[in-house]
Length: 255
Figure (cartoon, rainbow, N blue to C red):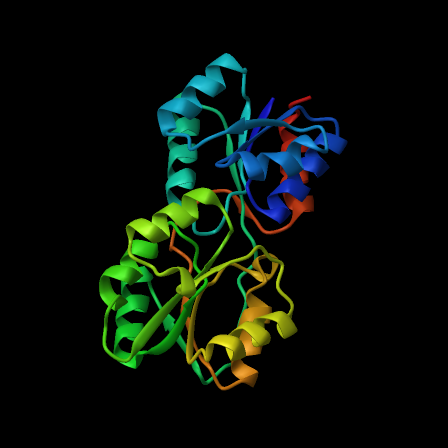
């Protein structure tokens, strides 16, 4: 059996391809909502955040012979835990990573992390739309909340835990944009105009993460984009296409 770290649309598509090729696949996601799309296509799903020890237990209990890490480019902890578990249990680890994109935008500021993005936003001020999710929301509220001349808008999935986190961090209801994508260029621009956004913060998540639409929309309206670069990680064996991943798996002869 293959343990596949999923949670994104392209990871789901990769898991489906592996299943279609005849491989037994156990997928992992963090939330029950993310599990639904996998269960609907007949994939087995393990729900919840997994430590390296959790993964090692799964490897032993479910006779896992390979880990395919197709988690989000910014899910560093999940990837580290997966590599550790694979090393400890002496099974192969493969990383599927979305290709990086090149943006030619003079109104873009590239930064190396969330703290640097928050600092740039604090210097720029204005109406800031945060599109990086809830996990690191505290980094931005700590630096930007109540800063004169600044309004922080949090755009995120309409989940109960996200709303509760916003409440704990003091994000006002009027500053929460609870909505699920995908977002067209027109919808992005409508939101930017509605709130008078002057700066947008996003992550280098890849084309599958609809980053293009966010950046193009901002560029056409003259809005500054702060782009958080992907974490610099050594994944070892890493591929950017499904065919490469499947070819490697077939070479391992796991069936």
